Amino acid sequence: MSDPVDNHAAPLDASVDALSDVLDLIHLRGEGLTVVRGVGGADVRYGAGERVVHLVEEGPVELVVDAGARLRLGEGDMALLATGAGHRLRVVEGDGSWMSGRFLVEESAASPLLAALPRVIVLRGSERGLEWLPLSAGLLAAEIADPSAGSRAMASRLLDLLFIKALRAWSDTDGAGGSPGWLTAALDRSLGPALWAIHRHPEQPWSVEELAGLASLSRAAFAARFTRLAGDPPARYLARLRLARAADRIATTTEPVGAIGRALGYESEAAFSRAFAREYGTAPRDWRAARNGSA
Image 1 (cartoon, rainbow, N blue to C red):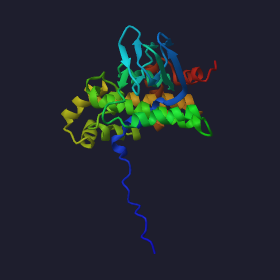
Image 2 (image 1 turned 90 degrees about the vertical axis):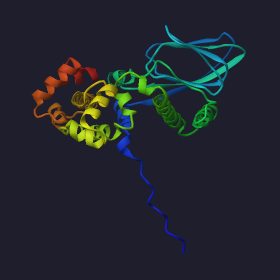
Image 3 (image 1 turned 60 degrees about the vertical axis):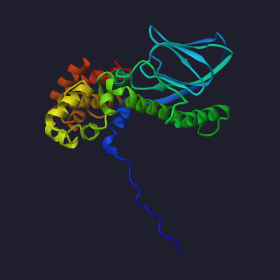
Image 4 (image 1 turned 180 degrees about the vertical axis):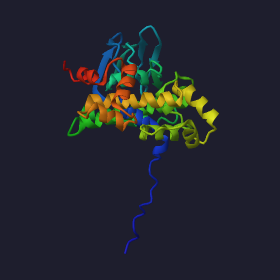
């Protein structure tokens, strides 16, 4: 008789994964994979507002960000423009080609979150520790060259993976010096358990002492670090998260406004409506009507 299978594999540690909650909140989805091939001097323009990733198959090519950086990209390099900065790619010499994928997000939620990022994040395919990059590029190229059942879903998942990997790489190198915001805080390991608790249970009246305990920090150290990275003190962060969750549910469900407010910790519909209007400049029902295209 064979030995039983060991089912005691360690699960993913959700307590340090506030980033997944942030990505869920903005409804990140990779879409629209294309290949561009050109000769020296060929120039392709990408308009402002397009959140895209480029993977260079053959180079060099030059990336020029509007009123910003001018970067040279070689074969195997990747550039993520998550903030929607307008830019262009140009074949420098000889032949050049690259794959481009774009990302769809819920703009009202994504714009303030992704604003913490630089206009462009570049990963060099030759760098150590980025072995996943040529592998992912190869899988995308294979789906383009020989599309089959599930290719669109495969490409979408791979683009999502590239986005997340780029965020991690940025956090490991430059993220600590980035702009304060939810995304910057979500990428900080020490704040992970506290952020996870807030994101899992935003309806709870979390105190700074409780959250500091989850982060294994003193109250003062936790409050200072949280405010520096998140851009808001814990209480304000919690209030904004509740309202962001509410805005998403109002726009995507038919739940009664009062029920949504109570589920997120508000004692009355009136209190919820006042808080929502202060944050978004409109009443919850008007927000729903505008998102649904109704009068």
